[in-house]
Image 1 (tube, one colour):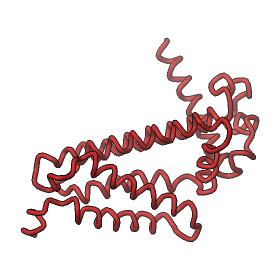
Image 2 (cartoon, one colour; image 1 turned 180 degrees about the vertical axis):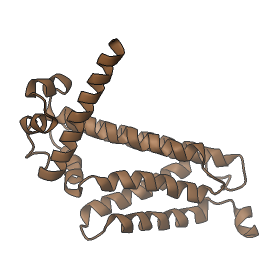
Image 3 (spheres, rainbow, N blue to C red; image 1 turned 135 degrees about the vertical axis):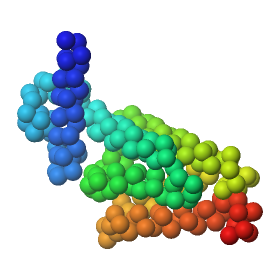
Length: 210
């Protein structure tokens, strides 16, 4: 019985978060009210506040849920990374970018802007935590290849992961600022940067052989 109650709570939470995500994307964060979110989720306002004490808490939940989905889908790649670390990173980044580009660009801009507003420390902290989790996953992926000859032994897996993640994030910021770029172009640009980065990350011996 307790398990059924917990399942119903999780389902209700999921409905609220998805309703919030859809409204944030269609009308913007500031223009969306908790009353509208409750109506879209077909729940009372009191129920929404019972799960989430504020709209900011709802926004945090949206970010948290999306991060969980990214990590879970990325884990599938880590389970079977293949033999080529360069392609494995591109596959993993493809998962991340698919999530980033699913969000409405205007909403992501509002999320970033909200971190600099008064009271935005919690949201900023959540975004930093998301970056740390993605960095950890890329590091874990590259550690899989450290025992072989594919990577330059002078670069640690974490150093390489930090370089690669920083490059991806830079291009995501450019994507957010330039409306003419589309998701396909972003993915291609990041893949190109991964190729360039691996020109330095690849084992020199392996490059000479190839």
